[in-house]
Structure formats: structure tokens, C-alpha cells
Figure 1: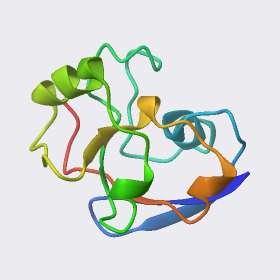
Figure 2: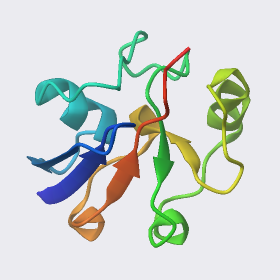
Figure 3: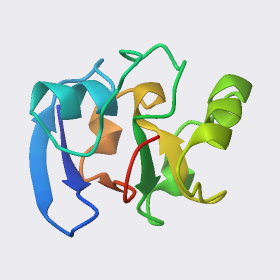
Figure 4: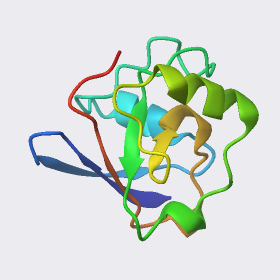
Length: 107
């Protein structure tokens, strides 16, 4: 289990425990975190679970694959260094303390 901090665009923080094996998106959905819509349910077929990963964590995540990189082209104001789709980040103990910030909106 990992504690993950979801930061709304307004700055409101939500710290929740997410079980290993779930995705960061599922952790947001299961805890009613606003700002992550996840319209496709985690199929990497939209960009509505886009977040900006805290710079301290970007190198600790598994690299994104081509599909995720392509979907980020549709995200609102993607940041090449920090943007990720939360449906593609699998939770492990190593992610304990992860911080992600939601963009102003999801598209």
C-alpha cells in the first residue's frame, strides 16, 4: 500500500492510501478525488486522467510506453517532463509518498 497525494489545481490536497496493484487513477476514482475523470476507465484511450508528477518522482516511475505518449497529445497543457496518465502508473510500495497535481481541466 502506498500513500499518494493528489493535488487539485486549486491547491487542495488529498492524501489517500492506495493498494498495491491498482493504478493511481483507480486510487483517485475509488476515493472520489476531483480532477481525474477517467472517462475510458483506464484503457489508455483518452487523456482525462492526466496529471503532473512531482519532479522528485518523475525518474522513479516506470517509463511511459508509446500509447501513453500518444494519448498525452490530447491532454490539456501537457508538460513533456512531468505529464503522465494515471491509468498507466501501477501502485507499488515504492510509490509511497508520490505526489501528483491535476491540470486546470481534463479534455
